[in-house]
Image (cartoon, rainbow over all chains, first blue to last red):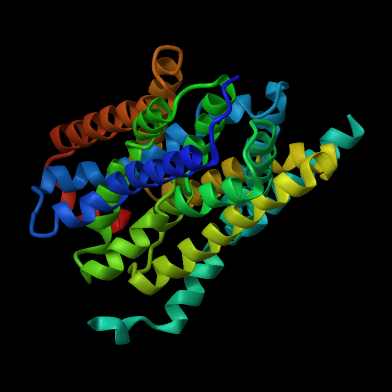
Length: 105
Length: 242
């Protein structure tokens, strides 16, 4: 393994920072004066939920080697949010149930 | 400058909305910190990367590539490819927030991540810059502190706690989605198709591009089908989703 010098590492981190920031900020600067068509606005609205869906699946099944782990956690989160609990309680509840699952099973 | 519009109340709402994200970042940030240490980075470089880059997926990729001995140019290029999905997220967010102050936007857009995007995009109240700062600063602090803690403490977090905490961000995403999906069946359809496509693409594409492609196709096709078969009822539907 080739060890990077600390100066190279710092420059590399700076480069990473720049290429990460550009896609984040560009739409805010680029689309200021742009009025999207209603159809495209609807797509952008749906993209929010689409990205959420893509962030959940298939990742949730791969969280641990045991696929049941993600299934149980996901089900608990679903039930807790379905009965109307706050998101923080949903997160803590899922962690709690999986903690018990890990310790006792 | 409309800085007087930055209300403390909105900032605190943002902080409150970030709690789920902040919890979820602890195990992932710590894992990153540990991996960075293993790859030979110093504490300064490890935390510096979290402070300057602030993107989980790219930091993991970067640390892996560094450990494999790849050069800095390759690392930077790969990170760019991994993060292009943020372009999609910022485009969608800008549409929801509306044009505001250029300076404020260029500051808080630094904090767009998968998770802060998820929180702000399902937010039903009007999004304000102050809310975005509260949300993003809280998540940012959690990520940076956790990566430093991972470097220093390493494996000392108990296994059962660490593995059960790895569900946190998925539980967060589900907790954010369910209220919207209950109100609107279109959301359920979009989520299902995007998740299915992403699972299908994953073996062939990197995860960043797989998410971009799956989300675009799912959102475009569902929007198109709804318009075609449900008439042009986007007005009332629009309010429902917002």
